[in-house]
Length: 385
Ligand code: UDP
Image (cartoon, rainbow, N blue to C red; front, side, top):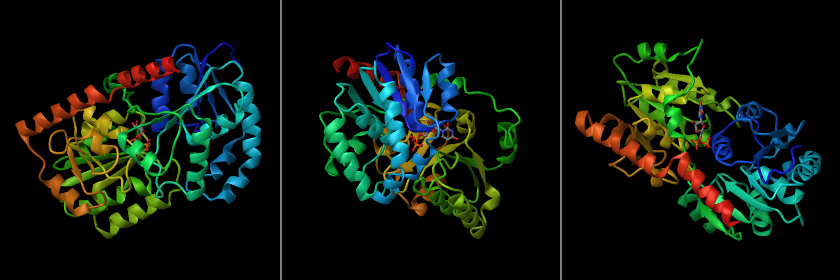
């Protein structure tokens, strides 16, 4: 364990998702920080490559048994792993002043591990606290821990803050910091080599069709089924789905393939799986779609597409309503409504009008949603603590 570092970042996730990509940006902008991961995975290597000290807890996979929608019984099954992690976390935080938790589980573990030890706890709460995402038990746990242990809860949109308060959550201090995207990555994303569906293959595949891209985890509430339903009314369009099934099994993906077959659109969709070079695939698309069926806390992929100069059509609830100005920098449609989605997609502006909207989207993303802005907000917060 390295000593003398004053800020420690932690997450329970071993492979990068939205929250971890955000953490990587914050780490790069925070000198003298180090990282503790509560699960093994590819993130360890990525952080080491930045020259940042990282420690990983071993054999903690069983913590995954407990999910935010789980009941008290699955929490009880995780107790042996939690006890092991508590002693690990206690050792790791000896010389640390500020602990930045990027996930709920890491916040719970580090709250208990630093009990009565005068550490400042910042919790990046990257979710909307609602009954569709969290069980009653999970909401009770969050409420109790946030009230007792957190110094600041950072929410990723005004929508998340609104729902946080509406659910009766409370803590010493709440702030909104948007989940910023590093715009430099758009021009430097790694080449896809020996890819099953390389960018050049997809250029051929989309000939004579308008390509729609949907980016993000393959997960029921992310709403891939809405776009497949819309596709039956869009005969001149094809779709690429980019993203893996991080927290779910493959049953949802199988149901999507079945739906596409029933609607006879299966020859016009491709699932590409998780991609590191997501921007290369965004650039290929004429339009990007975001379909979350319950309110999206923020929606990084929307900002990423806007930075690529793409028009995004997204559900009209949660974070997307703060990112997109409807009709000016993209479009919003009623969440879950495949007919409305198809209607917008078949009447997108063309030529000059389209260019104006694409430029407006890029400008708005650069003005409000970059990693640079997020890091400045974060540094100010740490200084105040
Ligand atoms: N992402 C990626 N490759 C993929 C799919 C997603 O790198 O194949 C990244 C994407 O670029 C974004 C993040 O994962 O930065 C997803 O964040 P978002 O807020 O959209 O959704 P979350 O997964 O956090 O719910």
